[in-house]
Length: 188
Image (cartoon, rainbow, N blue to C red; front, side, top):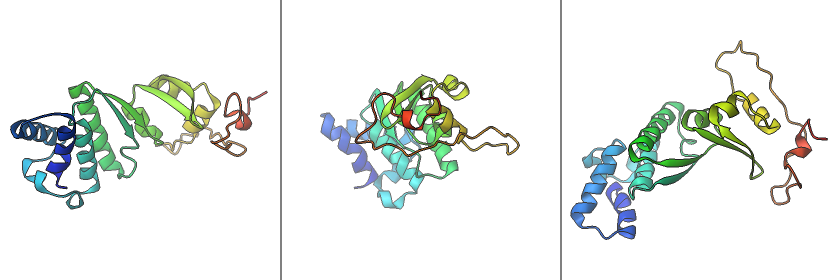
């Protein structure tokens, strides 16, 4: 499908719009994510990885949702393109009054985009809070270990790395109580 058809499809599925209304909405979202109208006739393989990600964002937002689940939206992009896509997501969040559930393993990306954070271990939330509180004063030992593994910008910053002992339990048969207790140095 061309970019235009990809963007029209959710609108055709969820709404009864005239061709004029479809065109207006497609042109609006293409402009919002940084595409010109002449690019709408191109196919996804004719775009770069960052551009394809912006097409996916446009497709997710074209129906004007209030809540978007973004699962690793920038993980396959290089750092400079990641920054562009994150800035776009933040701009669209403000303009469209969106809420994101942003799922990522990249803790620097999470800190950049999130106002609240939930840290999960084996599919269970072990800590939640305001982003700066969690990053500056982590309470759970797993959160502390995760944050200690973030590479430092300044090599002279000698923050102590926390190395976890033991094996990760089976996600299909997690231990009772705190799932982290088998690896926790504070467990009694």
